[in-house]
Structure formats: structure tokens, C-alpha cells
Length: 160
Length: 87
Image (cartoon, rainbow over all chains, first blue to last red):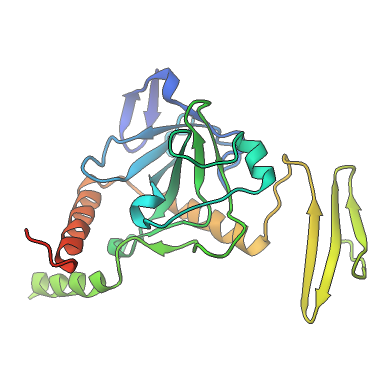
């Protein structure tokens, strides 16, 4: 089916690839249908989570395991019931986390490790869950802080 | 706002499906137990608010393919250099 998007224009997507978020996303509880696009980010693990019914609504997401190898989540009973499984194995679920890119300093982009979006691949359903522990931050730097110096240097070189 | 005073071990019932119990009081911290159906989301307010604001900012980002590709390539490069890898 064809959907309108602000960033990518009108695109054609397979009907069976949409993801249904019954509870929407935090702050966007009324947005239920999404599609994952790799449209604009080839060669990177970033993808776009695009709302099907709201052309403007899209998020950059990434598999948190790509950013933090040790990332592991466990469910409580309630969440397990909701998502229909006790385990987050990668055959059953895709996990994606929302990325924030500060406009002025994109190298300082962060990923929200505290509130991942779990997608049940077969059921094509997803939920954003807030993890109960404080172990993972809401803003985790994707690129290490040492790369801050590098980007400043190259800025200076550009300006000189 | 309805203000009630409870002791440890006491409960507040909201509607038919939600109850909040004071599990323990220790110093200036209150441990609360919450019973609510799955359809009612329960969060620490400050966490929910922070994430909500962050996501509202996130969804306003424009697409910038070159930026994402550049940044990711440079990270891959930095990683190789860190581990003293060959080019």
C-alpha cells in the first residue's frame, strides 16, 4: 500500500510489514500503525520507524545491541503476559530504541536504553516498555565522548 | 487533588480496578505497591515525562542520510583505531 511521509515522500510498502502498537509510543499513544524503513540509512544500523497514518511522525531507531553489546532485558510477569512471551530471543522479537540527535551537535546523539520498543516479529505487534530498573539510561551516548574532541578539531581545521 | 494520609500496610482504592498500597515507609522514602490492569500504564512520573519530551523532540528530526552514514562510518573507523587494528 502507498503511504505518505514527510521525509521520504510517498512510498509503497508491503501490507504485511506494518507493525501494530496497541498502546502507541510514550507521548504518542494514539499512533498505532508503523512501518520500519531502511530507506535513508543504508550502510548504517539506523532505521526509521514511520507512522503509517501520520506522515510527519517518524523516529530514528536502532537495535540497542548495536550500541551496547551487553544490553539485555528481562520481563516481569505483567510484561511477559502482554507481549506473549517470557523471553526476548531474537528469533521472536526485534528490539529497537529511539535515537535523539541534537541538531547543533549530532555527534552527541543518544539512544534511549531505558524504554525499548519490543516487536513480536510474527504477530507484528509492538510495545514500548519502560524497564523497571535504573540500570540503563534514558540518554546513552552512541558515540564515545572521546570522539567529541575529534569533531572539535575537525571543526577548527575547517574554520581556519 | 484528593489528599489522604495512610500508614504502612494501608491501601487506597481507585475505581474498581486500581489500588495503591503503602508497603513500607523508610526515612523519607515510601515504597508503594500498585495493582492495576494492563490497560492502565503506571510509571514514575519523572521518567515518563522525560521520555515523552525526548520522543517529542526526536520525532521532529529531519532525515539526513549523509549525516547518519558519515557518523556511523567514523565510529567504525574509531573502533578499528582503538583496537589497534589494521586498515
